[in-house]
Length: 378
Ligand SMILES: Cc1cc2nc3c(=O)[nH]c(=O)nc-3n(C[C@H](O)[C@H](O)[C@H](O)COP(=O)(O)OP(=O)(O)OC[C@H]3O[C@@H](n4cnc5c(N)ncnc54)[C@H](O)[C@@H]3O)c2cc1C
Image 1 (cartoon, rainbow, N blue to C red):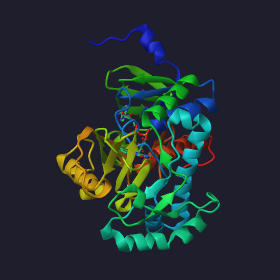
Image 2: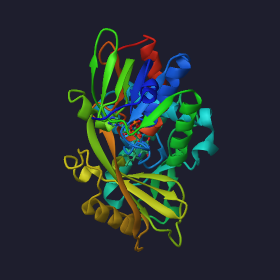
Image 3: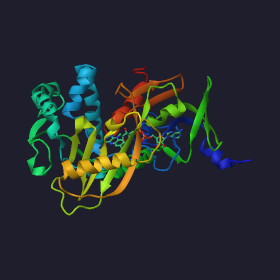
Image 4: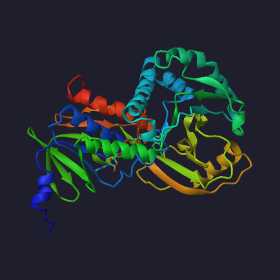
């Protein structure tokens, strides 16, 4: 029979909040809960060391949505909703930069460039023609202009000569962001335990009894679920589906004619410089159904597709090899807004971060506290 020491049980005793998931959302939400009530005990539990989901497996874009994506979102929802989602991402990045500073996050203000391939003339006309309208919509947020037409020729890419630059975007070093956020949570008194897979919970009128795979007993006053793409494993009825993102990094290149972050194919393909390497990812639109999975492998079909894209469009005429390949799981739904609020009396949710959860995460953490304070609810 597995036994647990008195001391182990002390670690899990008299807990106010159990936060499930030590990703960027869980860690920042825990920090904000602790800041809101410094006397409370806030524990973050994660099944894995270093998360193993999205927060250390993303592309490190500090981005808010390209002009093309914003137009699509306006069509799918409404001007007000699309701008509100854009605002949350924009505010989220500003908050991270204000709190920690660019240096701590490895942030480089390169701007983000949207490029169009020769087959995308109509899309390019649509997007570039709509820039005055989009800039006016975003004027209160970015008075200098959220988007501007730019010349893509200096990049050497095989794309249309005109692209769209979003000057406020840039690249982060994902590991620095994660380490900084984790350290900050610890410094605020949050306790983090990894290797703790939550299987479920039983809620009573006085507490939530959390069931762990390792059998350790733990009771808390409240539970916050921050499992994003894995939420359906715990709560099948919640509207958030897994969406795998595959990423590849080249070996160091003799020459990389550009630095910065780039969006292509309506945002489905993204690439960026990592020093003299190129990181490329995405292309989920090749097989949406196949990528709705918890499986964290990479597939040769995606690898070949993205390699061909690099060799024909990004660095035309070159031959590249990938030295790093991985995938991560995002949490998606047709509704692109994060799902934040009380699920029951003692269980709160902060999930469904979509493709830009790095940008959203600090806004989400503050929203969790607003929900907990009772300012709003779902
Ligand atoms: C390939 C890829 C590229 C991306 N690129 C960008 C980008 O450039 N810019 C951007 O803004 N966003 C990007 N994202 C999205 C962003 O990374 C995520 O939205 C964000 O990291 C989500 O953070 P999170 O804390 O909600 O979830 P996660 O980081 O997924 O954390 C969830 C945690 O829950 C844990 N967990 C799950 N189930 C259990 C359980 N039962 N018990 C205990 N623990 C559990 C997991 O181990 C995990 O650590 C990308 C995502 C991917 C996958």
